[in-house]
Amino acid sequence: MRIVRVVGVHGIGQSKTSRRQLILDWSRAIRRGIDSLPNAAACATSLEVPHWTALLAKGTDHLGAEDNLFGESAPMEPAEEEFLAEVFADLVRPEDVALAESQPVATLGPPKMWSPRLTRLAMAYDRRFPGGGAQFLVERMREVRYYLTKPDLAAKVRAFVRDEFNLDTTVVIGHSLGSVIAYDLLRHREVGATGTPGPAVHTLVTCGSPLGIPAVRRLMGITDATPLQLDSHIRWVNVFDPDDFITGGAGLSAIASGLTEAQVDNGIGDPHAALRYLRTAPVARAVVGGRQ
Image (tube, rainbow, N blue to C red; front, side, top):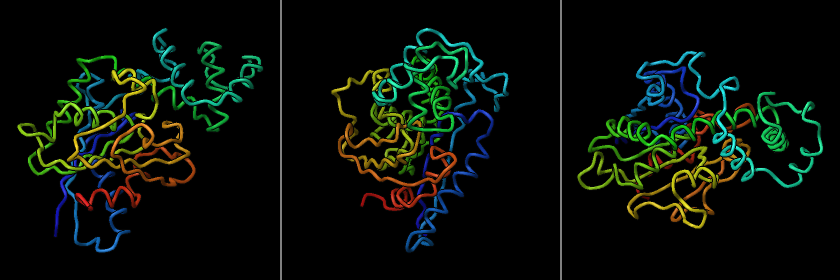
């Protein structure tokens, strides 16, 4: 039996889980996807999922509710609000903004501690993704910004993840903010290059990635005119759900070079959920398919 060694990089909102639980849950989801493919029994995975969110709580293994740095009750700095406004502006439609601007702020749904400007943009986004998608986006994007604007922390996170790679690691899977971390590791050749951990890495799988949002790329130092790209020996597969409120429902093919992309339907509820992505056939094919 062929064993594929995988490092998974989890995303936002994982403060209440643990490394052990992540490995268990991710392994089951990936196995479910592999079992849906022909000749599934011929392949198994060895998975590591470093719980990097623990670094946000000064090394503790869990974050309690009182430690949530990004919840709706957490104070928002002006720079955070400006970034969130940029994110919304990248994703909302003009007609939704026009409708939101015509409504009294008191009738809008998002938390009252938000400014009228941000509240109206959130309402416009909720027209595209009903059911509180804007509140989820704000919380998640605050965490994305936290990572991207604290270089010392980001370096610690990447080092923490990098320690899980070995000479046999061939596949990296990044979900949500984890896709940003994984992309950074590979684009800066911190893994997958001669002399670095995991020189055998040849496949990156991104799921529910916010890399498609220009405001996120700008914080990474990537201009709007610069395509995302990796070394030619890295096969990059991106998987997205058009109902995923974190990605704006879009993939990466328009702004990435040499990318293979697959659209999936993760169902109702939470189309951004990592486990829903991980159990899909495109992820399974990317994991077991090697360099094909």
